[in-house]
Amino acid sequence: MINTTRRKLVSIAATAVVAISTSGMFMAAASAQKITVGALRFTSHAASFVAFERGYFTDAGLEVEFKFFKAAQPMAVAIASGDVDFGVTAISGGLINLAGKGVIKVIGGALHEEAGIDGQMILATKKAMDAGLKTPADLKGRTFGITQAGSSFQYMAHKIAQKEGFSSSDIQFKPLQKVGAIIGALKSEQIDAWSIVPHIAKGLAKNPKIEIIGKIADYIPDYQVTTVFTSADNAKNKPELVKAFLGAFSKGAADFNAALVDKTAGDDGAEDMVRLVHKYVYTDRPYEKAAPSIRNGSMRINEGAKLNVTNVKDQLDWFISEGLVKDNITMDMLVDSSYVETY
Image (cartoon, rainbow, N blue to C red; front, side):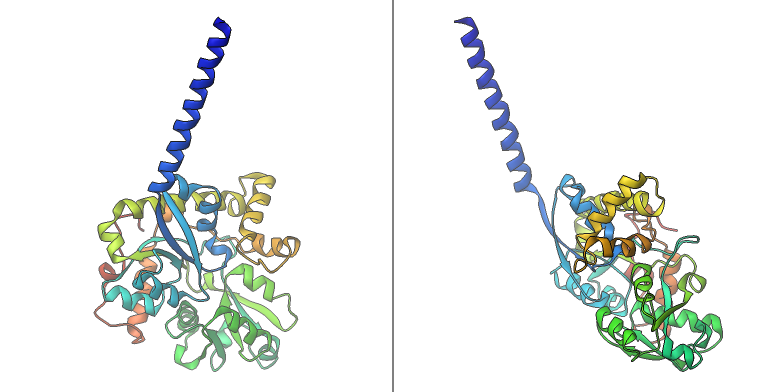
């Protein structure tokens, strides 16, 4: 009789614990903040993918949905319109002009060039090389692929021209709107050159019609390739939301760096990371073919979303000098430096 009563009490207690636990989970799910995160299907956007897959966003009280883009500028427009809450991509003229209107803020750093780690590479077609385009110094008079005027691709080409002693106006820029269209134009030799992140560059260089002729790191040391940005309203009025996003994003970046950049997570850790990234990058390829490109394209993502404001200022100054953005836009209008460490 006593044993039966004890068993009933234990059963009742266990049921209560399960009920309380389940109730807690439902309450947590109900209270999660739904956000949309903009991204490109690049290895360089892996921090967001890792944070999602490993539950860091969930732990931060965020319910994340991804919206994928083909280029940087449309993502900036989506942030301004409220269709996307947070974005991670290169600084563009569109983004800066929207910041000038008080609707967007850069709040952190993501991908950046680092000495000793393969970064963005400069590509040329075999046809152009046969016609004299042997090094980046030979880009004068050549066609160069960009998404839109005022994109990061144009900024990179300008820095090449500046260092090599000629004007970027001597380069014939071909705006093709989407990265995929630039890739197609390069493969078909409709443009002479382009620069892009290593996981794409190395894959393209396997084509006998395309070769790597230089590295962007030689022209823009410590380049802040991509940044984290959000609406000015979020940055000003929703600091806890911004901190939650950046905290989860930073954990994803740390895991990615450990596995594929610093290689401190071991072989199994690296394998797990490549498989995770493959869910979002090169999804049209079988894993065996995608894995080498993902591994080879791993660039540093800033620890703690640190932001290189020195390089961001250089980018802003260039956009202004080219007349691509209004000349009254300042760094304070573009960047909210209160959330992360800057240098």
